[in-house]
Amino acid sequence: MNPTHPRNARPIDAAHPHDLCEADARAFEALCEAGFDCSRVPEELRARAEKCAAILGLLACGDRPECDGSLVDVTLVRVGEIRRWAEAQSMEPLDEDALEALVAAEFEPSRCVSGLRGRAARHAAMLAALDVPVDGASRESLVGATLSRVQRGIDSGESRLRLDPSAARARPNVRWGDLISVVAMLMLASAVIMPMVGAVRNYSRQVGCQAGFGGAAGAFGRYANDNREALPLASESPAGGVWRRVGDRVHSNSANFYTLVVEKYVRPVDLACPGNPYACRSTVANRIGDWARSEEVSYSYRNMFAPRDARPSWSGDVGERTIVLADRSPVFVRAITGNWFNPTANSDNHAPAWPNQGESAGQNVLYNDGSAAWLKSPVLSGGDNIWLPRSFEMAIRRLQEPTRAEPLKGVESPADRLDVFLSP
Image (cartoon, rainbow, N blue to C red; front, side, top):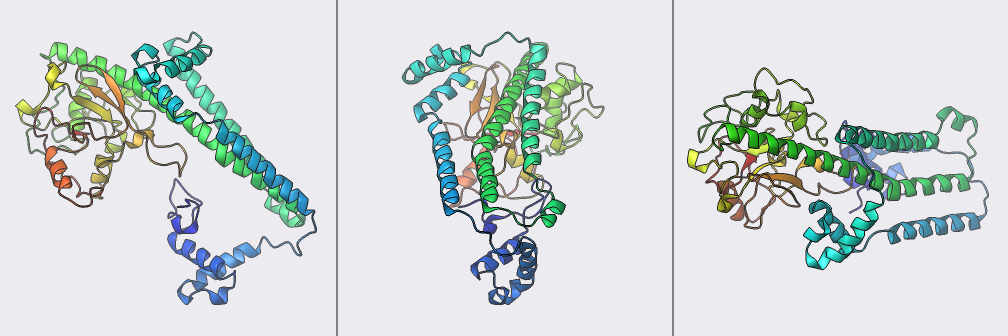
């Protein structure tokens, strides 16, 4: 499927202000199929098609100027060579797996699986050449400065490619060679530069998020030492009680997690994921004892609205190692609006920085023994879905279409200590 085809255009919104609405996209497609003859467009789309044709008519610049066809051929050949060169720079699948394993092993090649250890060691050697001493206080500012410089470069390139409408009207005779050069530059930007910048942004967000999980792990440990290894609770949190009213300390599971902030084990800014633009970055605890609204919550916490024997403890037994925290649940984000959801979707915290680059690659998770990991899927090896209670998981298994499920009502509970069910 071509994501730029008019049939796939999305309605106008804040994130994509220049996209056609669905009706205009259908009209434009019909106009193209009719050879730009409005009389051949179906009657129900003809009015919109005529408007599209009128806008396109503004680009008319008289008879097509004469130009050497060889210039077109040479330009297209060069574009093809550059694209082939860019594709050749990508790593082999095994090297990609080795690099990913090295990052997961905290850049210790010896901790990678034996089949990838040699490649991981070579990656580590190359990365060591980039290693410079940076203290913790300046690391965040360096990342921010780098991303700002990249964004300024992008903005500068866009401003150079922006055409002045008044100048275009004054000199309508644009050479075909110039137009082809602009198209070639745009193709290079979309095929090479944008994905690279998006990858840098996604990686910086993931690193920042991992740092936040480290701070949360320390806060969980200190709270557990003071409370007999218990996980944070803000209220009684009875099984079957409403848990999704963010901002209501008694009926909010996120308030249970926010207890770490209220009791000064961690600051709100330390629980703000870089991938959440609405995250609360204040250094002072909220007086209501919870985040003010659901959009501010960056991480999903183990649902504590459950029977006491279904609540895990911190640093539990080996047989009870379980996940207690993860990047924000996409199921909850859609459930609060009453929308259907994909139960196997990854967290939106690490979605691609640029549109049409696919879905999120995964989510960070924190276990009750203090260890963290990166999961590419919310479904664990044993079949447990970290976004859902077991009752929903069993219901979905009985469905023939497992990518849709009814919204959560906000009163569901984990089945037992090993049933991971994360929510705000």
